[in-house]
Length: 449
Ligand code: ADP
Ligand code: ADP
Ligand code: MG
Image 1 (cartoon, rainbow, N blue to C red):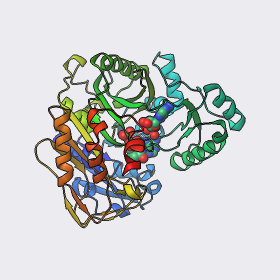
Image 2: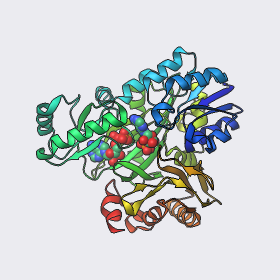
Image 3: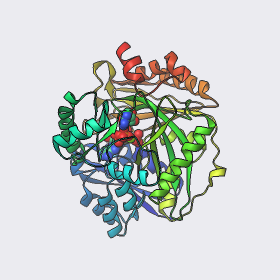
């Protein structure tokens, strides 16, 4: 097993990975930007190396400095976390050239699945149902209008390299399409340095259901069930739960098998997630694969009793999966609330600043993955997510009650946050009945706050 791992990330996910390493007896190296000097992840690791100024491109995306830090500290592997370099095939290739193990799938897997248009093609060839759309990249305005007409409205323009809900636009009619195309293109260029756009049919009021996958170097692949991530704002997840109230045992089995088939099509050899959209008729479509650890992995850990980060590290070290599909046992219900430093009543304006007073909830069934502490100054340069609050119960009702209880205990002063929004979601009658889809927040809650 690796003796030392460098974590090329920050915040709660860096802390999460350091914790797994420590329990496995592995030493850790944190990297941090100048503004993150006092951050919890840098304090918690066995060693910490500054990799540059605050701007992500100069620090957490600075491949040269991250590789230098790895060589300098003698770490044998890099865990990329999520975001930043986690889905960058060039980074995975450079690690390989430098004899550093990249803790993730092969660079070919990242290449094939990270390009969303290419992934759609591969899935179609493998007989995995994909969202209807155009297989390829849009080349200019005439092409755009032609393909738009062929697919029909409403449709979605999506960035080939997209992630985090960015570079996506709904288009309801031909009059809107050119403007939407240009804004999606510039957003994609700004966020991903890649302005290629593809088109999908817009699925009305869908459910976002994703399957957690684990594969090893020996061709074994299992799934750990699904997560329902339909509570979203602007195509970004806000609250997730596992299992989904939508899926019958039969549908779960069918979708799980298709998810494994999708992962097998690219020889997937790490932990990852297959994301689907499910419509009102329970028809489901492959949307994308995330070839990395997912933000909401803890809810699957709670119901499966499997530490997904430890499994990911063991797979990278060449071990075979510790579990077969028939040994996977899912039990109980888990919910995750993403606690963000933002103001829901001011159009979710991010609110960096100093946390002047903090009480974190605890008790039976409550887990917090976070990197903040009282007196910590949230920098304005990165994501606004500051904590993940996870509740586990023997069933959904119990998980909801525990989450509500924990949200009431949670006190964050000094920065605006979305704790109250989560409380309102959990008190909503439709949510309680499990009667919600991806338009829930927009239609049923945000407009009524
Ligand atoms: P998840 O799919 O795990 O729920 P999110 O979509 O919420 O994750 O993204 C998690 C973090 O990673 C966010 O900070 C997001 O901006 C970032 N991220 C995700 N995909 C990409 C990408 N392709 N490029 C850059 N950042 C990304
Ligand atoms: P990202 O890489 O940013 O996570 P996704 O392709 O996973 O992008 O899409 C993010 C979200 O956008 C989905 O969870 C869903 O709510 C919405 N979405 C994406 N594609 C469609 C579609 N074809 N029809 C309806 N909603 C969609
Ligand atoms: Mg996605």
